[in-house]
Amino acid sequence: MIYCPKCGKENDEDAEYCIKCGINLISNKKSYKKKQGQSSSFEKQVEDFAEEVEQLGKTAGKKIERGMKNFSEEVKNIGKKVEKEISGNSKSLDDSSSTSESGEYRRLYRSGKNRILGGVCGGVAEYFKMDPTLIRILWAIIVFFPPGLGILMYILFWIFVPRNPNHNWN
Image (tube, rainbow, N blue to C red):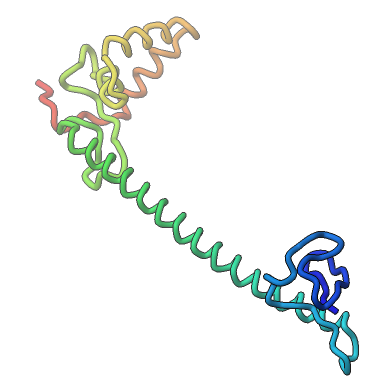
């Protein structure tokens, strides 16, 4: 007797297809034959099933490993692209940009080029790469809404934000 690997139905020894599910029994190399002298065909089926599950587990493990390897390579490639983009952008910035010596973070300075009073609005504009006039207009709005906040912030920035050492302050 041959047992179907898909549904477990008992079929004749010479059967090509399973009676119940129609799977091709000849193409399946593992035939679940009922052997005489064996204590139980069910135990043999369980052993064969365990072997198949183990093989599937190994195959799936290899596929997952390959997928993770491909994923990590893609992440590395994206990281390299980002690093190139960042290094390209930092090279294109002029010396008055807000990058530190190590290039890890940008530094906020008061501007000596775009200053009217203390260079605070010009420095903020350089930091955010915006037009200083737009920053001045926004700051003027903050002066009135809420009242006095913009003036207080400007004075604090003037005191605590350092001058840009690359600018002429005469």
